[in-house]
Length: 190
Image (cartoon, rainbow, N blue to C red; front, side, top):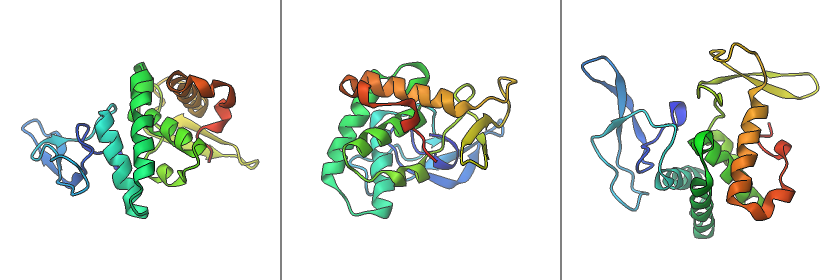
């Protein structure tokens, strides 16, 4: 992931708050040691995260975020590892983006009976075209729409519908046994 939720795309380790600038003025953050990782992260590496991270990095980020709020849960972690593996194996193109894998995993773990509302605080939907931040409008009836903050498509259309289609597609590819019980509206509920 990038932005507020960025982590090391190889290991899932957290990143420093401080930026380090290279000769061209590009600022990147350092990978930090994390006692929750099974292996040492690539210390000294500079990154701003990535749109696509390794399965290990996503899982380690998941576990770290979970343990900020709850006690360790080996059953959940075993299930989450399997879910991330299946989603990453099934994903192609935009489906591979961390944020899409994250929200598809949230739905799968929720369907398996785990508490997953906390996952919303650790990711944010991104524009499905440019991966930019989204702006939101909520209507009186409670409906929410999202539009690209940079208007990359020159259309002020609701991108949540497109994101939900991507989530359903990767979910059904990874878990074909659940295809008849999944609807587009079951993803990204606000």
